[in-house]
Image (cartoon, rainbow, N blue to C red; front, side, top):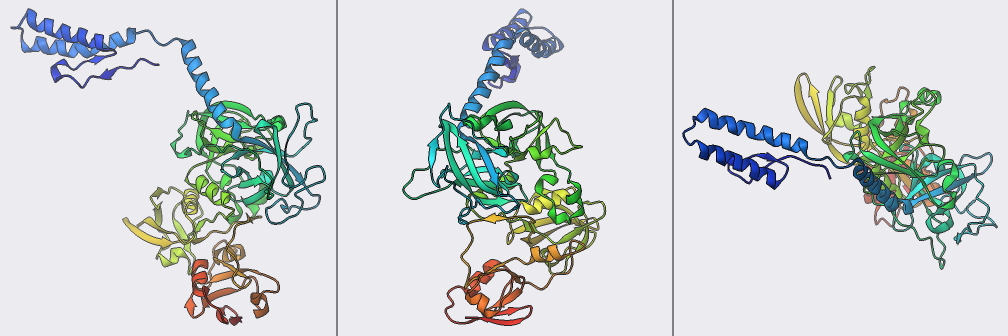
Length: 522
């Protein structure tokens, strides 16, 4: 324990002193009292001099106190690190991915029923691998962290992308098949879970406690646990430790990503990542970054060290407001949805509005070209990247307050967000049941993907058809994917929720007003 000097507030002002211990304080008080007794007629200036000397003498006394032994400090740090590892280690697993040749589609998904089992490993089996058993040979591996009471495991999206089969090795020599519950390519996060079979016991997994990366600062001690070079195939993750080198780092987009529309960029291409002072080796993607309490504050990603970037640093996706929202949504098997405002940045990608998309939330909130957006929902904005992240931290349909500066005047605007487009394979296993074979969504993804440049004029308020089930009433009505519906059962429609409410409880034919004319769904 370090020695600390404090202001003693439990004494009258005349006796207040700086001290390290009660004995020091009593000594300095006696000094004051003896000074006064020896010469009660001293001039006021002499007494004040003694008072001024007192804190100086106290500080000198503190400085002379023996510092804790270096060995004690090292042992205390060692105990803290070992304790945090012991707390987090049972929750970290090794993930082995087996891909089918010639396909990038992820097959190991709950409900798809393809590519999950083999003769050597039946569905639902949880078995112990023996110490003398040949190691699982896999040249495609990563890490994961148990985050749910039902065995849900958080990892990075690129670890499970394209998997035909996933095998997990966990603590206590447990080995089992897993399947994807949900995956979000934008955040590069995914959640998998053990394959469930009725009547068969699942693996014994312990979820980690989730911390808050927003509390971290440069210099915070952090630990990384994972499966570097497939070393954790025995069920025992490897650990490393260091400090948080920096916050809000980014991965520069590669050439293909830079040629694509800006909407195709992933969150790691924005200033979101934690930078660690240790390199994360192959296989660490999806591993745990924990604080000294053993709480999860980040997910490691080895994809953050491309050629030309800082190859000696390690990077992690933080469990901040955005990360925790993505985690909870994916754990439920749902799609991670991001807010969409509908503005175009200026050439310098500042927080100034260059163009407002007609019919967008920004237009509805009466934003104008030249407006400077200062904050979104209380989150400070300094450039276009931080504006995108602030908007993305809220979901579509949420109302947020914008603080803007216009002509020297600071104004507030309330805006209801649309849905930001997510490019790539979005994996969802828990979706609302389709209405008569029809699923709809916000139209903003359709508009943005078709836009060149990024934001162009969009249709009036409506929802877009995203799925029509073969042989359903919706299919027989002639509805097609991509059609826009702006009225259902005589009610104006602006959101998927509004559509669901409009058609809820209907038993007979329902007329839908679309961009190609009325359609009757029986």
